[in-house]
Image 1: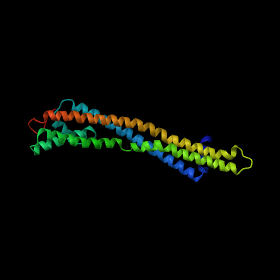
Image 2: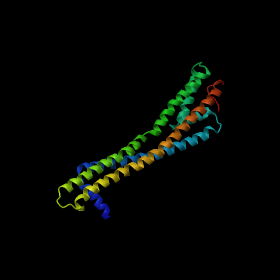
Image 3: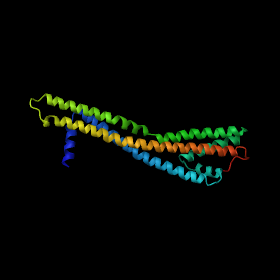
Image 4: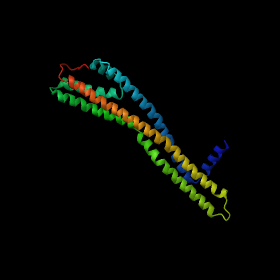
Length: 229
């Protein structure tokens, strides 16, 4: 408790510039933790949805029935990609005499657009973690340099210098370093972890687009607007 009080006292007695640096680093740390918790929940949900959809999709049911079921909900990830591709395929086959290759191309184009949107959603706010992880140590280092400069200025104004003279400046310098690392380390670890999971999820989406395109190619010559898997 005494140590915590002394650290708080040092922060309150620090120079205005160093206090501003403390505030910037604290804000960056809070923001990065908010993103970390939000991305954890969002990626867990996206991965769970993808697993459930793939299990249902590859169960061998009728694609038109599957489309109608998912068309009633907003869905996410693979559900949206499937819905975009199937909708483009059936709509074009109903209302035009386009050749089979054009049908498949329209479906694949719609799925690619939907895939890009889904990947963009999963990558949202990751750049904040990268920025906090790369910039925070330098912001903390700036506070460190400024604190050391204050310590030397206090030392220069004394005829008999002791540890008590330079201690406040050195202490605020070290606190700035610690806060910079406190903000940066979780952000860097979380960014690497979530970027890897996001890339795996994007590869999963890409694989589904290719597989579903193959299914549509096999059924592009079949009669009727609703292909069955």
